[in-house]
Image 1 (cartoon, rainbow, N blue to C red):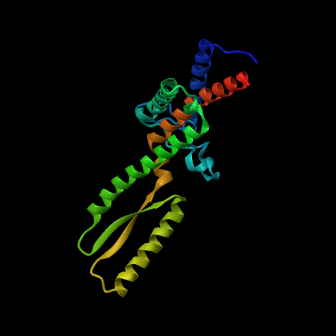
Image 2: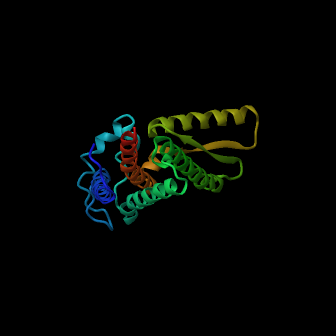
Image 3: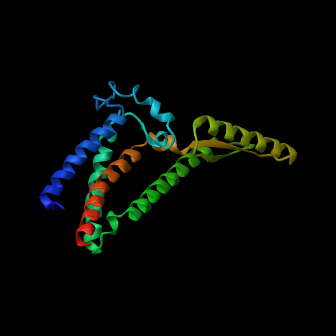
Length: 213
């Protein structure tokens, strides 16, 4: 097996970052105007991917119409690359470059975004509550049509329940579409950048394990 020294690995990692960044940029619409995103060459061509199972949940994500979309994957890549390296060095382990560690980090990030949406839309629900109407939130993890149908059905049932119980307050639900919200957030490009940084470290870890065996 060909050995790769530290300098060669760094060069390969930089090359991989450029390739992965271009791929993310393409799926972000291939926008050429950083400030306004007025020209996005790939927006129409990749729209069909939204209907593809699994892939459609995350890609294509929102068009890069803001500087933050351009910066987020860079920040994710740099923080993940040096963060994983620091963790492994500090704790004298290789666990941070493993699959389990990646899964735990992703779960934490997705859960954190869920909490963020809960606070944001919870405040909106509170502001929309008034005399006789108490507004809550309902999270959906499916497509928009199913979400609207589900929330509409639940709201009708809550209205009927209020009438049967002769209640002075009717509870209504505000739909929160988790995946569409995530797909339009810069957090997704941050996460994808972090995953891109994890991949070469994971491969390096596998190669070193095979070499020792």
